[in-house]
Length: 361
Ligand code: AMP
Picture (cartoon, rainbow, N blue to C red):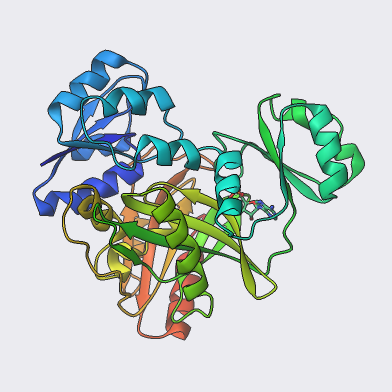
């Protein structure tokens, strides 16, 4: 079976690493000449709106999936005429737009911060008055790793903020005084069977995910599964979806969903029985899902800007390196390590050992 992937970054690369043993081949459509997934499959180097090359991809593969959600809706609609596309165009349309996704959470009874649609500075002034400050202004689409958003703390921050974000459609959200950030990675098969990985506790630095620690028997696991299940069923979703939550007042508030394999699920490659990458491929290909059970304690530490000296990373016990083969650049995710252990205290010590190597590249 040949899988077409829109996007050829590290997520595409890890999909190929998981799918190759299942007998799958891969083609990645990505305009970047140095797309790092090209080492692991065919690289169709073309723009996402290039219909000739989209048609070529559709003709070559059995199905198409995505490694990022900001794919133009027309691209998905075009491909869907010729080849099965998972997740569906309608799921992507909602997941790529913060207004659509928060409106869906509200409709499904999933708690969210207060939010408002912002089409102008006048809308922002009115929403800031009704929601109150602090609040977070975010572009409705195309934001990632903390880009395309601004925290508004005082009245002066509100003035001109719409133009600062580019005068594009935005959403204003009440600022959540969260005690933690968690995410739930789930997979849903074509027949509706759904499985959930354990909740993961996430730590961000400058808006970029730094550390994910998989939990054991988290008290909010059942609640998170309930919320995520509602979304998966509503979207008739096929594949892996990640749901990011704020932990607040002992409960959860929805932040956002990602309709794809997710950075906070990278630990599953070595830390669970079947990784998020393999389970995504099993789901879209109509194959039986694999176990999402954790094998011991597990955490993932991102390498941002550079990968520390490989020999030193590999000298740490039960530490697994993933080097994405990308050029090193400040603020860019270029690799990660999965740490495992039998107990949490050892896991924490191993995280500390890897952290001590960061900056020594
Ligand atoms: P996002 O791109 O929406 O995931 O936002 C990136 C990060 O900004 C989140 O992981 C939070 O740390 C922070 N953040 C986003 N929205 C809010 C909010 N409404 N209240 C407080 N912090 C937020």
